[in-house]
Length: 293
Ligand code: CAA
Image 1 (cartoon, rainbow, N blue to C red):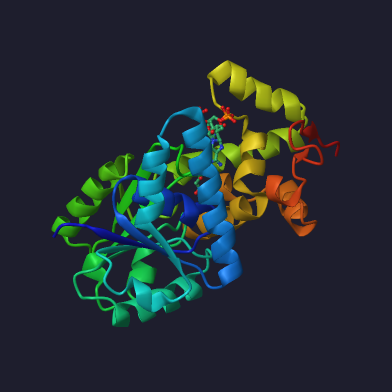
Image 2 (cartoon, rainbow, N blue to C red):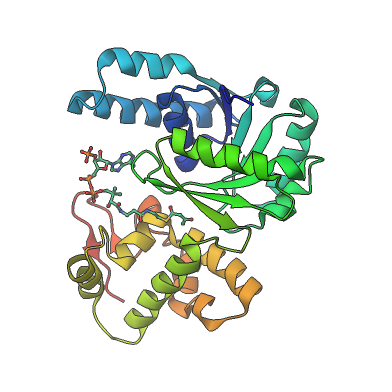
């Protein structure tokens, strides 16, 4: 089957990025949000990214126009009915994803491949809300999607090998490096990243170093683009807390357990960059200041 038309459900941080890369890779792309306001916000962020690329000369004005021409926003799930692949990037809640895919299963042609961008939920448990678990995969992108070169392609025990290979090739056509993962909680990246991030919080709790020193150590000592506490603020403390709970529930290992400070920061609403405060204060976004605890 040739993939021509891509559907993306959710036009938030991840969905808008996925829609942008799909349209930029030459696919006719339809992105769906629940309200016109959320859709408008997502499409504006794509517009901003494309403008930045054009200003830098990475793409020409003509190419920008072509990408825009391939991208359509909608609030109607029915408009996804003739897509060859649908990538879901909605709220990270099992019930919401199952409900969405149950509805898409009825609307879409039987050949459509379904993919979820979930970072921590079990793909098999989402897939079994449909009658096509053999045409269901995980396609996990990284934030910011247009910049990060990786996509984890996840197969369940029910995924048909030919469908899986098609989606691995699709990941490459999106300009990403696909890695093959099984449907184990956290796949590859979060299996390794989450214990590292949680350990950085434990190190802070134990007084191993200050926020700035912990971050600078990993940035300058190991060449990471962001230190762990900056990365936690970037990913979102609420998101990391949620993922850690799912991973702890699955593996029952201390390395996945949320440190008390993380739980308290989430309870206080200090969710990182998006809430203006996390391990850093973002009142002046160009010049974040480390918090004092
Ligand atoms: N969208 C699109 N492009 C962006 C962007 C965004 N949100 N933010 C930055 N960029 C682009 C900039 O335009 C710039 O492009 P050029 O090099 O072409 O000029 C480039 O990224 C570098 O930007 P900056 O110079 O402003 O800043 P930087 O050098 O610090 O890079 C970064 C920013 C790419 C985010 C980099 O810091 C980085 O790679 N950080 C680590 C991000 C990471 O680890 N992400 C994965 C998180 S885990 C996850 O997503 C999965 C999960 O399940 C939790």
